[in-house]
Amino acid sequence: MFQRDFILRMIEEIAKMIAIALKLKRSGETSKAYEELKRMTEKLTGISYDDLINGDTNNKSISIKSNDPVEYLDAKGQFFFTAGELCLDLDKRDEAQTLFETALFFYTNAEDKHKSFSFQRQVDLSKIFEHLDRMAAP
Image (cartoon, rainbow, N blue to C red):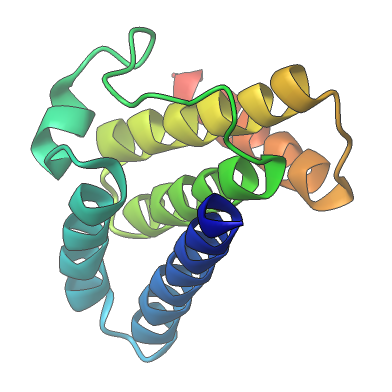
């Protein structure tokens, strides 16, 4: 029960982080949204934003626990997807790519570990693949 309450609070916290970033972005404060994104990433992952961006995304220093609920993994995926789109808006393509790959990491783990389907996850995954394909094109 305690762990479930903790996870629900974390999901709520991630939703608030996404809302703050989107509100700043919509009000034209993309630089401020970017700084918030960096701060939130560290709070969410326990590693610095720069370490995440400069690290090897195939060998995550971000861990997934076997008992992490699918909703928690989806929330993290959605956070990094939103962060990637913000970085694209700021023409930070390399950072956006890493953030999209991180979102992909969480979303695919949600699918693989929980054998679950989410329409929103599929929409986000489709957009992630579109972004990554466009970014790979010369």
